[in-house]
Image 1 (cartoon, rainbow, N blue to C red):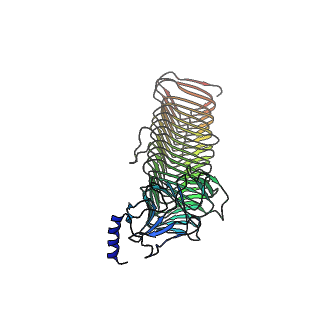
Image 2 (cartoon, rainbow, N blue to C red; image 1 turned 90 degrees about the horizontal axis):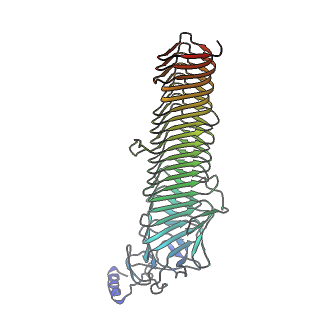
Image 3 (tube, rainbow, N blue to C red; image 1 turned 45 degrees about the horizontal axis):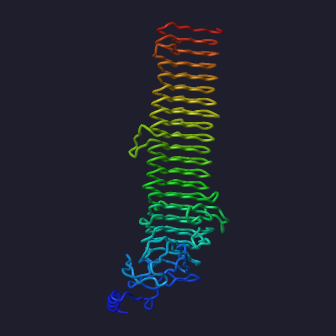
Length: 560
């Protein structure tokens, strides 16, 4: 029909209460009805496919089946109105004859039975009453410039929809299939909730949403809760369940990502940004964070087989990283409030921080808690606006800068604590404990509050320990050769104490106490007290050494 005649027909139809259908002029491309619930397809006056969806069940679910469901760049319409209605993409369109007066679907299911993936390259618009839209294609879904209009919830899935006895949508069985986001990405910014449910999801472009949920793996997924129960997969498991490439990204108010398949990991090189809420990421495989992972709320990460952070992982509230495997960090893992790391082992050459402001400065609060059942190695920057706790079977902070505006507690529960070459600074108390040797060689330990050091052996060769009140207890040897131990009140307990060319100074007037059951060697060393020195030792070697006290010195030797 010529364009002029179309315009005349449209004008006349407004007066008569019906618009002409152009189905006889051109078959709409991309959407092919098929199967027992095939809907009727007509064409809007501007050439878009208009799907007159099937009448909904008593639970408000309209089931529609297709042999092909592709949305072209110009868009497509799902007609959910029984009367003539205005649309954004096609202007006025006829009502859907499958719907009774005042009737509309709450959920529109579009189930595709095809050997090819659905191509969603334009906007899918619900005409009439706003509704949830489901696109289900077991062969996969590819999105490039796709989006949704007048849609309350959008579900893209490679699973099979399941209906309950009352006709409601109960969930999906996902056994295979991928969802890919590429090119111009997915715009669901006007949709309340977006769910991607597939065996695997690849994001090579941006996804924009309000609330974004991704559940991957072979699962039975509940419609209302998104709870996933593993089922048998069809074919081999993918190498990665969620893959966000460097050009990809997820931008939403809140993001929830779950990978349920054992041994199948998650890799992100792009941007994950929860801009008005929490970001939760859970995988039964290994997680690699190589991009920008940010949350304005909490950032909660759990990975069974390990976490590797080589990017920037930051939350304006709390960060919680948990794995039974190894956690490695060569980037930034931090939060403006608390940061908690729990792992089988920890290896960090980057930054672990709590109370970290966006400009890199530290607030006066925010707890850093790093713990492992195995070894902790954190040789980069470790910082807390409040308290800091680092514990593991063995702990190495060698060469690190570790600071807290409040207290620091370090614990090597089953082995050594290595602070060699490190700078460890606490605004409050500093408590360092090791089942084995505590080494602070060429390191600096300082605290504004009491400092307590307890270990089988303590080595402070060329190191420095400074505090108002400092207590060092070694069940074996305390070696301060070439080191410096300064305090207002100082108490040292050891089996053997070596202060060769070292310095021990107490500035307060209380007694400076030494309890050494074996050898006390101060050869070439200096022990100076503003008050008095109380010393008990099995033997004393003070060759070329200095023992000086303004008060009365009381050395007591059990043997000479």
